[in-house]
Length: 91
Ligand code: C2E
Ligand code: C2E
Ligand code: C2E
Image 1 (spheres, rainbow, N blue to C red):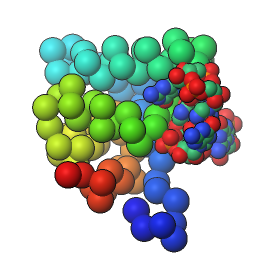
Image 2 (cartoon, protein in one colour; image 1 turned 90 degrees about the vertical axis):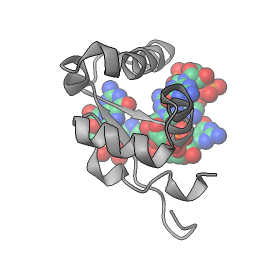
Image 3 (cartoon, rainbow, N blue to C red; image 1 turned 60 degrees about the horizontal axis):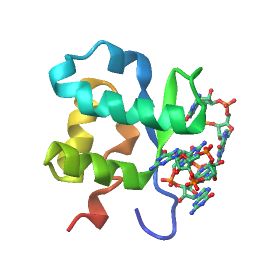
Image 4 (tube, protein in one colour; image 1 turned 90 degrees about the horizontal axis):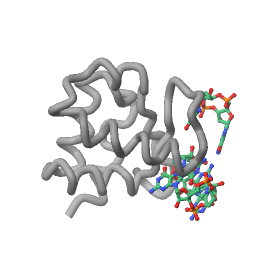
């Protein structure tokens, strides 16, 4: 996003995450569970994550942040407004 505007937030749908195939969603599920544990935030249906966390997840999934963002949106676990969020910082 441009400096003039705050980037859209990255919001994971934790309920949708539970219904995905663990072979694909496993790393994301474990990552989200770790953030919940670090925050002590266990009661939410959604979890807001950092921009940096999408870049870390992109390394884990061996995808570009842009591709991974689109995949998570297509899975229904990431808010569609997140699209394009991490694109500009991609190398
Ligand atoms: P930390 O990064 O040293 O952050 C310490 C505290 O600062 C956090 O405690 C939180 O109260 C506040 N804080 C830091 N960054 C933000 C932010 O962007 N937004 C908000 N609302 N608050 C912020 P908390 O939540 O208990 O987290 C404890 C530690 O757990 C954090 O220490 C960090 O190491 C880790 N953590 C928590 N959530 C995330 C996350 O979404 N991504 C990553 N990578 N680490 C996280
Ligand atoms: P919002 O960011 O649009 O979030 C709407 C609601 O989604 C929140 O209502 C909360 O029920 C849920 N939610 C979003 N992210 C998380 C998450 O990481 N964990 C959990 N457990 N729930 C989440 P809530 O809590 O009543 O907050 C209302 C509004 O207050 C938020 O709207 C946001 O604008 C602001 N707010 C709340 N906490 C923070 C914060 O840590 N940092 C900032 N900057 N704003 C916050
Ligand atoms: P937010 O709380 O509305 O924070 C928006 C942005 O402000 C963060 O984007 C980050 O760039 C900056 N920010 C807020 N608090 C801090 C802080 O204590 N230290 C630093 N260095 N920067 C801060 P970011 O990192 O992409 O995080 C997006 C959202 O993810 C946050 O929205 C918050 O809802 C959640 N989040 C991220 N890290 C933590 C954390 O450690 N603890 C909690 N409880 N929530 C976090």
